[in-house]
Image (tube, rainbow, N blue to C red; front, side, top):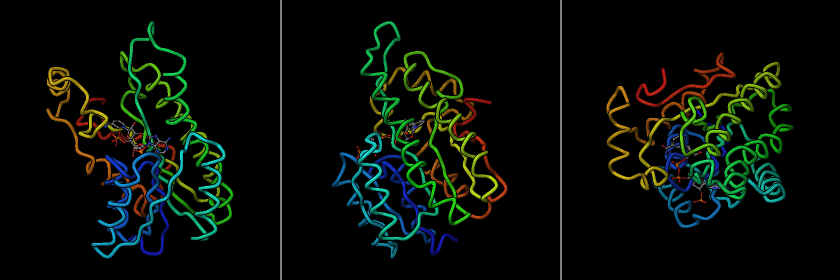
Length: 246
Ligand code: NAP
């Protein structure tokens, strides 16, 4: 289904990014597994992909850093000549109530979650426009759609990502490039592991499907948005949240 396609997944050494990288590779794409700190995990993802006969390479790059993200994009384009699928998945949380939130906690979250996606789209935009095709998938969040107490920085970054998605979708539509966002709810990864058990239980009771999601649930949608079955879908925000937001 994705044979011959080159996909770049940011923050693909762990969690949701890891599952997205694996499912895209399983479906034939050559996958660039971007990481920032998790070198060993990223190399393990590549090994897992190669073990089932897929193609992948781990590439280091901090998406928040303008120069580093530019040189990573340049290196990838030089080696592979193109990128067909870009998944902006890299993200962090620095939760806290707004009255105690530091500038640094606000800025770090915006720099990685929102500016990181902006960097990657901008660096690869010439490539996408020239090839007149492509899929850009931004991993937003239910927090960006609904807001969340204790996550003003994170929700702002994820809501910003939705605005970025819709604007770029409009800019790129005439070239046949589709840009969509996924808004996951509560997915079991290291990001949500830190939540206290009580909070998880309360959250579970608020989710109509009654449980947290798995990274694979998000990856299945990313696969759909990366392939030709979604060619007439752009500028959308699609929830994978067990019905938390409806
Ligand atoms: P995770 O397990 O904590 O993974 C975060 C990933 O982001 C890691 O692979 C990390 O790479 C990468 N990353 C962080 N800073 C980076 C940077 N500066 N440059 C490149 N990569 C960077 O979290 P997750 O749950 O899989 O989250 C993945 C995405 O889904 C995030 O955007 C998150 O906001 C979003 N999301 C998650 C949930 C959830 O419930 N889990 C819900 C809604 C949305 P390194 O380890 O290599 O630094």
